[in-house]
Structure formats: C-alpha cells, structure tokens
Length: 208
Image: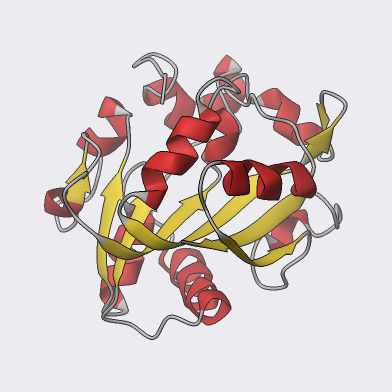
C-alpha cells in the first residue's frame, strides 16, 4: 500500500477535523464501543474465539486488543508509524509494521482501510491478503460516479476509491478470491451511527 508518514501521522488520528487531515479527533480506546463491534463482527463471520485473526489497517491496535480480550489469537498490521507507536503496551507486541507474509490466519478483517488504497494498487493488496488468510471480511464506504454516498467521507483527503458494492465484489474475484460468502449494504450492529445512509457502507465476506 502506498502511503506516507505524514498522511497518517499525529494530525490524522488526533486533530483530523481541525487540520483537514481526516474525520478522527482524539482517536482512543473506547472499550464498550470496540468490544461491541468485535462481538458483532464475530457473530457476522461466525467466529467463536481462539481462531487467528489479522486486523489489516489496525491503527493503534484497538480491535486487536478487543479480539484478544474475547480469546482470539489476534494480530494487526499498519503502515502508520505514529499509530503503531501510540498503541497500548499490552498489544504492541502483536502489531506489525511489515506485512506478515509467513504467518497464516483464519480471518482477515479490513475495516475502513481499503478505500485508502489507490486504484493502481487495490488488486495487488487484495491478492496479497489471499496469500495468508482463509476468509476476508471488509467494511468500506461506498460511492458512485466519483462521489461517496455519505458526504462526510469526502472530508478525508486520503480516501481514494469511491465505488458501489458490485465493483468491490468483482475486484476481489479478479484478485483471486473464489467465493463471495456475503455482500450487503446494510448490516445492523455494524456502522449503526451511519444508519441514516442505508447504502453508505459495504459489508463483504470473501473466501479463498
């Protein structure tokens, strides 16, 4: 994934609205919200704990922490030096700054990350995930004709891909993912705070 340190540095996570870097402000561990999300994610993908999970684009590792609290063997990967340096000490050892090519995972979770990848790189990233994950679960903002369905998504200058659900599913198939388990535009319990945009996000599960 092509990124720069300045793109996803302190301002991106701590001062996004004020600096125009992102929608994030004071990005921090919120136990109730994060554990609730992970619990609902596990129900969605029918995971029961103890399985291995890679959180792709893990930022400060908060989902990794929540997954480990729920007994998953969770690890995270991110390109942001700042985010990884700000991770809680209890999860820091489980976070990678280099992609873990030689480690296999039952699940890969990619939430609010693949829209940051360039059109030129997205197929390669999708294919990379296929090399060491059995099942991929993705949450991405959807769009069409060069605009997101959720106008607020335009406020993050690092957002690149603005495509509908079908485009994403076809992209994964072209990248070598053989089976689309599920693809929908609304999944109660996940992203409920954007519920006033019923087609705003895509929820996709792919399997090798």
